[in-house]
Amino acid sequence: MLLFVPGEEDPIERLYDCYAAMLYRLALSVLKNCEDAEDAVQSVFEKYAMHPHLFLSAEHEKAWLVRVTMNQCKDTLRRREIRRAVPLEEAVQVGVWDKHSEVLDSLEKLPEEYRIPLILYYFEQWQVGEIARALRLGVSAVKMRLKRGRELLKNALEGGGEHD
Image 1: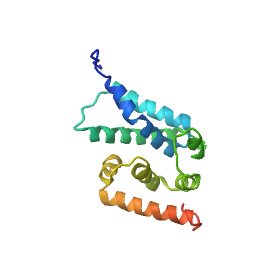
Image 2: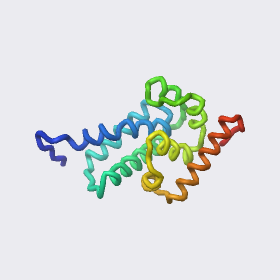
Image 3: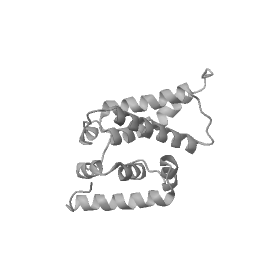
């Protein structure tokens, strides 16, 4: 049961205001579909509302939201029989991404293990330690994925071929 004290900001509203856009971009980068990304974010906040959690810090809370979002995306992909890829240009058109489309095209084609750390680091301005905790990886693993992801992007942008 959630307790709401009149005059105080609703904790779910506070979380939504702080993290919804970031979680949406993360879900969109995994699911490649605006509607599925919106559903995933909504499910994350529903889980938070239905099962209140005690967090040690704001960073712990943010990591929990990212982890639950990633799990929700994986569940959606498992349930989806036909994977319809929507290019990230659609996200550019709705104002979610504001980088050059050539970079987005190359980023979209990266394997998830490299794409997600790159998005969190460069688009969301997360620190390596935050990414490591959220993805349940070691700091060195995140640094290696960032390094390899940058190399794959560089090769793709220079016309170095496929990176699958």
